[in-house]
Structures are given as structure tokens and as C-alpha cells.
Image 1: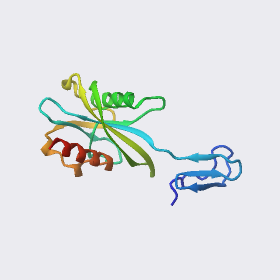
Image 2: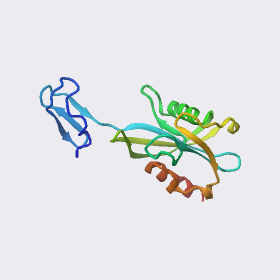
Image 3: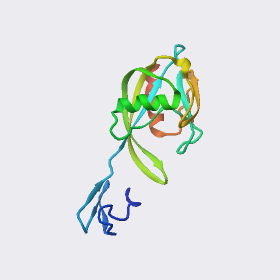
Image 4: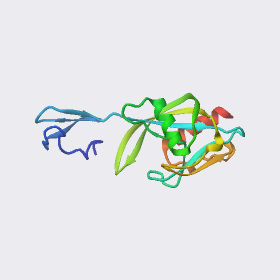
Length: 173
């Protein structure tokens, strides 16, 4: 099945002749409009407290509902990746980022409403101003500090998070 199979009609002229052009685009044979499905930007934060424990959250929604995650989410239109990181961490944990260092980026697929959304997930190692302000909210049902030896990647619901965790834990060994 083509990645854009759910998009059956041209969004410009309404023609049903909206055909796959390659693996990531469709083109209308009627009006010539071409649509490319590019990845959505997302962010996630590695936050350690003074005891060296990693901040994790429990996912409120699918995919991975009920599983562990890192604080983060999708960038909004018009937002820088850093602004998205600061906003998402604040929304999910009530914590204020004081420092963020780039860790890595990985392509991923995020299934939403039975549609695989390609994403480009960017990870940061962050410091926060007041870890005591921690309070789970928004897309997180719970916030937990885990000792690094107690972090098991199979408990995390998203593939890119598991990849980044493996890299992060390997670096810390």
C-alpha cells in the first residue's frame, strides 16, 4: 500500500486522479498539484536529577498508551526545535529547561488514526531549573525518576525512544 493511500482526492481540485508519483508523493493528473509527505519534527528530553535518575513519563494516548516514554512531542508550525522542546517538557512535566544539548536524531514512524506519519525525532540531554516542580500533565499520566540500571527499553512504547535510550545508556556506561 502506498504511504499516501488514505489521500484519495486531490486537495486542490477534488479530482479522483490523485496518483502515486513515487514512494513519498502523489500528483493530480487533472490539475498537476503534487503533494510530498515529509517527516514531522518531534523532540524528546533526557533529564537526569541530582541522583543520576532519568525522568520518564507514562503515555496517556496511543501509540504506546500506558507504556513509558521520555518527555517530548511534536513541534508546532512556526516553532523552532528548541521552542518545541521547552514547550513539550513544560506541558508534560511542569519543568523548565535551563540547558539543552543535542544528543541525536532518528527517523521514525508514528501511527496516528491508522496512518503512519513519518517523523524526524530529535533528542536532547537537558537540565532543569527545579526538579521539585515535577508534575505529570498533558499527554503524561505519570512522571517517574528511574535509576539508569532500572531502565528497560522494552518498557518504552516507541521505537525511536528505545533506540535513543540504548545509545544514551551505552554512553553512560
